[in-house]
Amino acid sequence: MPMSHADTLVPTDSTPGSWNLQWKLMCPACGISEVERAAAGGDHGAVTVQPDRDDYDSPLGTRGGYVRVDLTCAAGHGFAFIVGNHKGEEFVGVVPRV
Image (cartoon, rainbow, N blue to C red; front, top):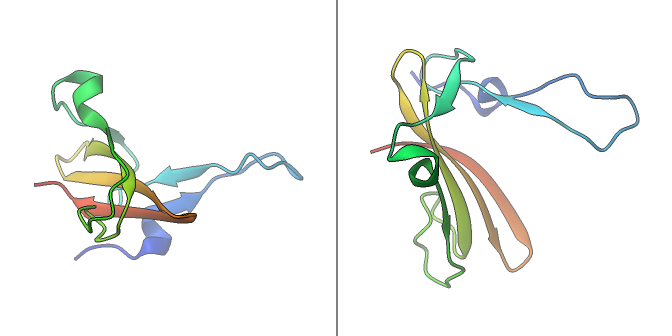
């Protein structure tokens, strides 16, 4: 059973009064914190930037450009962390990697 968003993206301690907010991404399938970039053709193949289009082609179902980071947890679950932007709106999501 997939984890809730509150258990997948967990805030870490940051310096009080600082804008440096840090988040720890847990595996959405099993909840472990040992998450690394996928072995998808090396670092450049695991992180991709998609151009800004008006199509709804993002894995999040949003319009516009996005950055996709393919990840795998130590237990072997594959997923992608997506950061998207379209006309000033920011979207963050985690989707299963196929």
